[in-house]
Image 1: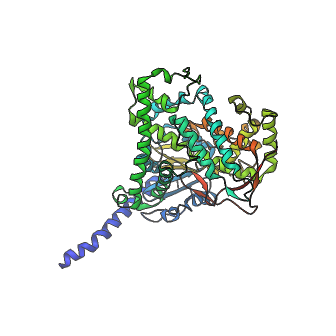
Image 2: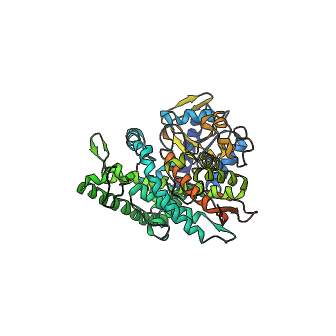
Image 3: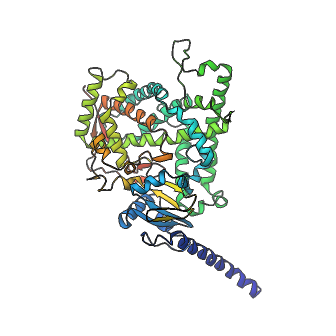
Length: 506
């Protein structure tokens, strides 16, 4: 072989690595040139801190440990992406209420094939239009009608759980996940997959696979590049899952659209059917009747919003309920206070249907839910992209910097929450909340992109958990069983939520 050609073969890759390394070095110095006072882990050229963040079982805890080691504001990088990890309430308020940091971070792009550019992942004008359009769907008059859905699915859940009474230890998450999936299907699309009686549907399996794939793409560098990713087995699995998920949603949309064209009055909130039953308006029905700039939404526009609603309102609720039941099983004194509140509301009839007014009276129940989300926020970290350079106090942040917010760490700061590892619902009395910075609690995010469905979620949580509490004593299964936390898209317990149930004597 020609020596010159042979030399070129060896030199070219080395030269490319050197060039990329120089670009990385320049980017690192440019991004953080005014942030020498901010500490962080030492990055390697090109790969940055990838070696520390590349394990799905460790990435979450690594970020948590960085904050413990380096402080409430930490700098680092993931490959060519520069990161600022911030858990300081005053800074978080600025970030969450600034137009400069409105877009979601780069890793949300792995949700685009599934959710496209719905409310969660969109930005700019489209996000503003969608937010304005969707907000009326969460009016209390709309939410009130969903209590009937939660009541029905809660009754099915209770009957399923009765089969576990006497079992010394079982993972309650399986049941709660299926119940939440039934509820979100009926409220979002006006239909049911009957998940609690048919847990092995293709749709449910597809959701689980997509959650796994999105996380894997985030932490595995070679899957960041679409060209390389298409040769992986996950790409093939993803294509099958997307076909299942999108086909299901689009078929329901087309069916409901046709129904609206054939009988518009059925979508009137005052409509009563031939059996005297009032028509329930699903989230999908509202989208079908919505317009932007005078034009109705296409099936694809509606699909991305419905899929977003399904994604955001399913696992977040079921994991919160699972953590709540685990915590209550470990704190009988809290269960006693909850039960006293339930008896005050329901009197001698614990089996009567729950009303919207009942849910408004469950103040202590709401405190326990908020404290559960403090300890175990469903969304463990959030990311924002920086659209332009900005300065806030001692931070000079460059355009393109990825800002990470870690509620799990923020919520466990001892200066904000004394004895942070303890489960103390009274932290969320009105008096105690008024003493804390409002951005010291990010269970539902905050600012412009706060969770639009938080009232919906709280109603579902209180309705379902109240029904379980009135039916069972929630007991600790294995005293030495401690949760092993892992972060997927949603925070979860890697070793399950082991509890024990006993039939309650009211």
